[in-house]
Length: 621
Image (cartoon, rainbow, N blue to C red):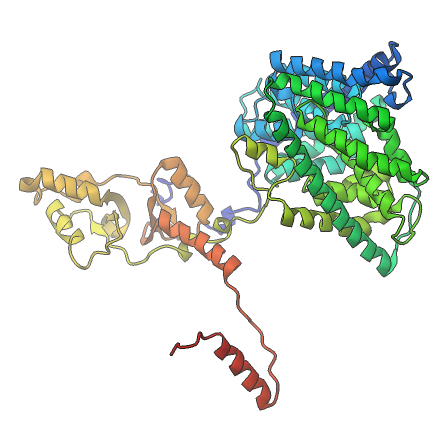
C-alpha cells in the first residue's frame, strides 16, 4: 500500500500546490450573483422612485415619482417641520420595525458579514429602503447609495439563505448585492467592485471577486434600461499633463481633504456622543436632528436632499463662492448632526458634495487648470480620506465623470488624503461605529507568512522515536532519560522498515505505566500506539498545517519525508509555527544598514568608526 493511502490530504509534491484555492463552486455562486445584480438594480430604481415620491409629496404636495430637489419648495418657514416629521417616522420604524435601519448602511453591512454569518433579516430589505426614502425625501442631507448597498446586500443574503451555502458563500452574495446596488446607483461598475474588496469582502480571492464583478457588471447593464447610462456627473475634459505646480497643488488638496475627512469623522461621532447623553429614548433623536436639518434648509436650501444637482454645478466650476461656503458650512453641519442622531441615509453623496465644495474654495488660490478641476480633485480625495479606500476614490471619480485625464492628479490627492487620516485617526467613519459595538476590524491586507514558509524551515529534527516492538517499561525509562529532549511530548512509533506506525504521547505513557507497572515489561508499544495519526510533510506550507491542526484539534504532528516513503524527518508543534510569526515581526522591526558608502581615504573610516562608537553607551566596555 502507498504511504499516502492513510493521508488522503497529501499531494505527492509541490506540483499539487496552486496559485489559488478556488473550486468549481464559484460557477453556481456566480450565476446566482448575476440574478442578484438584476434584483439590486431594480431595488435602486425603486428607491429612486420612492425618494422622488416622498420629496414631491412632502415639499410640493403632489403625487409624482420624478426626481426633484427640495431646494425649490415654496413652503417658507413651514419647511422646517418637514424633516422633523420625516425623522419621527424613521424613528418609529427603527423602534418598532428594526433598529438596524439606523445608520448609513455600510457599517451595518460589515457587521452582518463579520458578526452575523452574513445573515440579514428579510424585513430589513423592506424597511431600509423605505426609511431611507422617507428620510431623504423629507430633506435629509444624505445619499441613496448607503441604503441601496445595505438593501442589495440584504437581498443577496436572503437568496443565499435558501441554499446550503457556507458563511463565506453567503458573504460573497451579500457583497455582490451591495456592490451591484452601488453600480446601479452611480454607473460605476469597477469602483463598486473595488469598494467591495476594500471595505466588505476582507479578502482578494477569485471565489469572491468573480461573482461580485459579474453582479456589478450585470447591474450596470440593467441600469441602462432602468436609469440610463453614465457618466453621472459629466465634466469638461481637462489637460492630460498639469505640470509640477499642478502636482504640488494636488498634494495641498489631498492634505486639505484629509483634514476635512478627519473633522467630519470626529464630528459625526461627537454628535452621536451628545445624543447618547440626552435623557430620552433614541427613537426621538432623529427628530431633534430633523430640527437642525430644517433650520439649515432655511439658510441654504441646496443642503437638503441628496444634492446630485448641486454636485453637477460644483463640477462645472461656474458657481458663486456662496455655494461653496453654504455646502461646507451648512451641509456639513446638518449632515454631521443628522447622521449622529441615528437616522437612515448614505454618506457618499454628501461627501462628494463637500469634497467638491472644498475644491471650489481651493481653486481661488491654486493654479487654474480648467473649470471644475479642483472640485473634481476634492471630490475624489474626500473619499480616499474619509472612507479609507483610495483606489475606490480614484476609480469612482473617473467613472462618475469619464475624465480619464485626471488619473494622475487623483492618484496623488487621494493617497495623500488617505495617508493623512491613517496617521491622524485610529479608525474611519465606517469602522468607528463597529468599534463602538465592541468589535475591532483591521483594514490592512498582507501576505500571511504561513503561506510562504514550509514545514522544513521550522520543524525540529532532534526527535526521539520509539520502535513498535519496544515495551512500555523501556519506553518510560527512555523518555525520562537525560538524552530525551525536554520539549518533546509526542513520540513517533516506527514499524518495520522504519516507517511511521503510530504515535504515543508522554502523558499516555506515564499514565499507563503508573496503572500497569507490574505488566509494563510485557506490553508492547504496538498495542497502545494511536494508529494512522495526523501528520505533516516537510514540503507543506505552514498554513496547510495550521488548518489541519484547527480541524483535528491536535497541536503536534510527526513530519514525514515528502518522497512518500513514510520516514520520519522531524516534528512540528504549534510553538514551532509561531516562529514564522516571529520572523515576520523581525522583518518589520529590525532595522539595519545593508549598504555603506565607503570613501577611498582614511577620513571615511574614521567617520564610520566614530559613528559606531557613538552607539556604545558611555561607561560600557
